[in-house]
Image 1 (cartoon, one colour):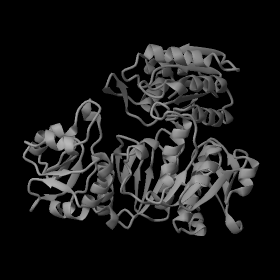
Image 2: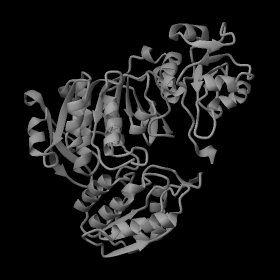
Image 3: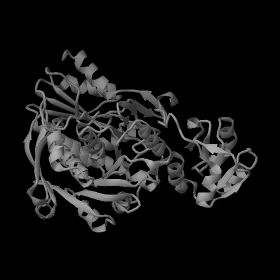
Image 4: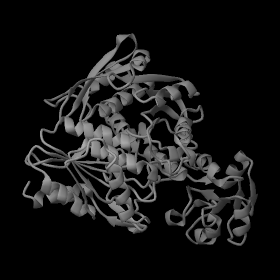
Length: 525
């Protein structure tokens, strides 16, 4: 259902650039005349094509993008950038052809040149890690807004340009889309941008052409081993953000052992942060910044952040769990590394006009409470790794007087090696377990659920009851039917997403809406 794929955000008033100048500045080979050709955009696909675009033809898994050059010309493309093989395929398309050895590798620099990314004065913040990238990015943006800046955000959930919000396609968009987004932000007067940077974005060169002012590392745990051979390869993909061509300065969380590896192997200056009670004692003692959890309740987590020379700040963030406080503290230290004074940040986070102090942020689908004051508490979360399950279940259980009920499924056509461990952790942390479907994609959902049930049986602590319920609309209703006042339901996986992917079709679907409907039908208005 392509109509549900969000649009690419581009500048509304692009400044044309000379194709001849591009060829000259980069010393590129070309075929056909480039004189007088002006370009205003870059795209990889004919579906996103605008008149005046450079169409970039890349060898795909099944076909070469250059074979669509004729269609691109009909759609308004003014030039083709491709490799030698693509140039042969598109010889009769009637477009001037610029030839590069590696079109994908050139996409970032090409897009940066067309969209004049280097001319932007906005601060760029990039966060990577297995869990917490989205939360850190949202918290970072919220603090920047409280400091009075017009902000931008690129995350798994959403893109923000000032007050404009658009649902995201990918965690990190393709390089051409990323640079177009930044150009649109420049038009809107955005002064600081928080970008969630996935391992795949680094491996697939989606952030090429960007140099972040500050980069942050949250943690590393089992995930994405469908894309990477092992944890070491996955780590190396993340580590690439800590190269001089990617970032100027870095902040590294030491709460997982991989943080020390980032510090040891980073090629840019870094500072460190660690959370008392969760990082090792040695890492807490060696960290430049230390996080102490002061108060946890269902509405917020309060913490103290102490840095060099005894400087400290006490504030709160509006999410449950120590790990969310660690993400907030990481965001604050990233701002300090960018040049903001800790005292100014503290002042911005103070309560005013009767409001409580703290970070004023809304994080869609991140341990998001979708229930009312009566009945069980229901949380919808995007977590889809064993570590995310463990932390979020622990946080929910802490504020649950009754039983903790877990509802979850697993992605099809994604890392299957983590499914058993996800199920084991879910079983260990819940009193009642409901296994269901998520995005089956082209896999058999029955087979996925079977693997999850087998993994759940490996848990040392078994839930009171385990159910297999499909589809997820019925699973959440089963969980609500079992719940009583004082119980909590954690529905992990779907989070903010507004669709399910079933055999390549994006079916409209909202876990938040389904959970609220289930509560309403059960009489918990």
